Image (cartoon, rainbow, N blue to C red; front, side, top):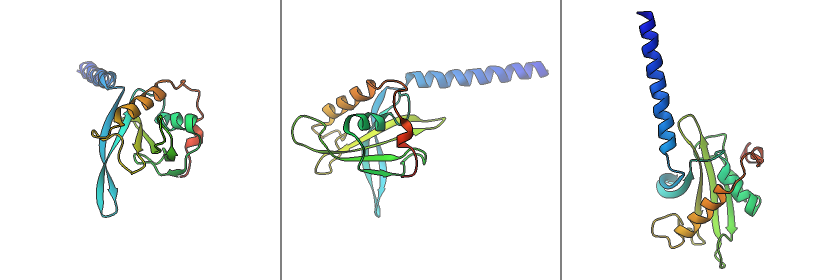
Length: 163
């Protein structure tokens, strides 16, 4: 009876592990996700580009840092205390004179693992909103940047620590 119980327990554990592995394999490389941010006495809907097939939850921060240099502001992470939210202001991301604000963040837990980027234009409009005219070129820009990061080549310790 004891052996049967151990065998049943082993089958259940391996089945659950297989389901988790399959779920991770099926997850998209990236997607735009809308989430709610508390703002003053209200809340605001914000879109962010999330990357799932990454080396670190800090990959978005690393990609922006390597191309545009040090951030303008650093604050506590939206998703966890050990990952800071970084803000770059007045970045020229595309051809033309338009400047953007870029915010990076991420999450590394046993249930969620992603790096994310939010972008706002000079008027403060959410660039990943479905109606924004620059949504696709900005998405393509960051998908390319994250996709071209060399594994293990970054100094991730630079982005951690107190905000």
